[in-house]
Image (cartoon, rainbow, N blue to C red; front, side):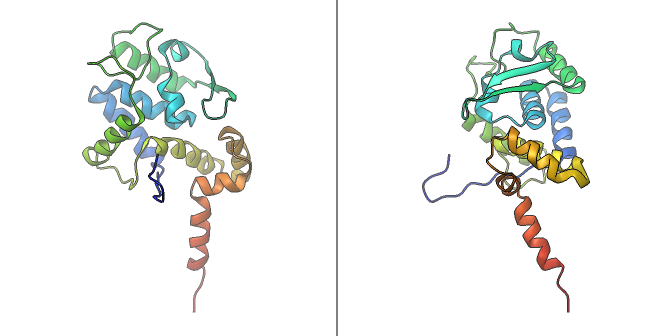
Length: 196
């Protein structure tokens, strides 16, 4: 949360860079953070909902069912096979914790991570892994999800924005467009069209 009068920005990671980060974190033994980056980027969850997850919510399941904290809305998310395998790999690499245990906990203290701690770690990863993202926070993964869906949609981007608007609980696609930074890019593109 920003101080009064201060603006905060979260940029989206490029999809390939996000995938690379997930693999590098896993390779470096940071299994929980690898899982957080992967699931948040593939599901578009807010960090508060992500940090509440327990292993029983996702291990061996084909879908995740949750009630979002902010909106109170019920959300059903399909767990695709590639992510399901990564979940299983991380679970086993962590010696198969109790299914009732929260996923995102400190190994030393056994406490659930805080949003601030996650954001601090992500800023460290930006430097350590030489990520190209300028403003990196847990909210970046939600934007990564949305941006990638729009990019995959190509000519059907407007239909994708309608679906994303529903997923993000935005009141219009215009808000979703602005949220993803598409509006600013479109406006900037107008100036590139000019010539004399």
